[in-house]
Amino acid sequence: MFYNVHIHTFKDEDVPRRFLPLGLVRILATKPGFRIVSKLLNNLNPFSDKDTFDRYVKFVKTGKKATQETIFLDCAQYYPKETRFVVLPMDMAYMGAGEVPRPYTKQLDELAAMARKHSRVIPFIHVDPRRDDYFELFQKYVDQHDFKGVKIYPPLGYFPYDDRLMPVYEVCEKKGLPVLAHCSPYNTVHYKGSKEEIQRLLLKSKSDKPLELYDRSKKEMCAQFTHPENWRLVLNRFPGLKVCLAHFGSEYYWDKFMTNPNAQNNWFYIIKDMIKEYDNLYTDISFTLHNQEFFSTLKVLLSDVTIKDRVLFGSDYYMVQTRTTERRFAIDLRAYLGEKYFDAIAKTNPERFLHNTSL
Image (tube, rainbow, N blue to C red; front, side):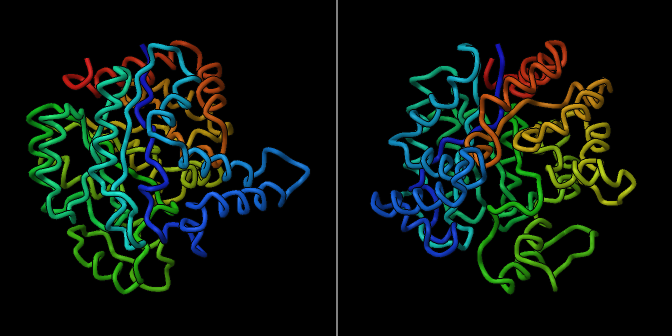
């Protein structure tokens, strides 16, 4: 049985109004607006059906599907029938990007119903500590709806060691629930408020690492929330907590490693070293390994026994649609690594990471 530990099935109505520039979320929410914009994007490069614009249209079309189940089944078709999937919802109500059309609980209830219907679905809950009832929601969906773990997304505007998250980690450690955290910089999903607001949020830092508060884009500033070193405070306090730092440092830092292997503060290096220091720390290769130039690097990494035992297979569907297809991500990587290494990252390691939650 294989596992994909990192997919999304949230719908366009779970995305805030100002998530995309120029009011595109509101425009794309209407059928006429979607037809006009998608046609425009599809025709920007009439000589290719594989360019960025076409892939972006596919991404938007996925989010507009009728149900999360439809999105899930679209992803699952590319995998063996027994494959199981960790589904990660997104709570984007507090990212400073405007109103989210439907309540977060509706997304969670739909995911819970999907998990009851499809045994291959392993539901996690995204916890944002700024939501007033975040802990009650966490307890409800773990205890009453059998959610199997927690998603943390720091670049939305909070640190992973936020005091409000400590009770969540305590429960997770006690019950053996894993935590999967976004851990890559410079992504488009980040806090969309003003720079002044981001500065105020960053000043809540407990890290000794110097803050970069000025002469940086909002995207660059928000990367500081999700720096892998921030997790040391959590891992030291909760040594039994299983944590996965998703994306293995990001495509950005893998590319930096390829071009400048001696560069300092490379998240790829930091996560690799932290894995050797903390027994319950994992990483996944979601999104990052869409770039086939990194396949050989991953294969060499997996020759290190410690690293081999802590890497998890995930694709980041349907976010990865903007760069490649799910079929290519899953099949090409499996063919390149061979069954021994692919079994490690897609079967053995996920079973250990999800132990007591999915088995």
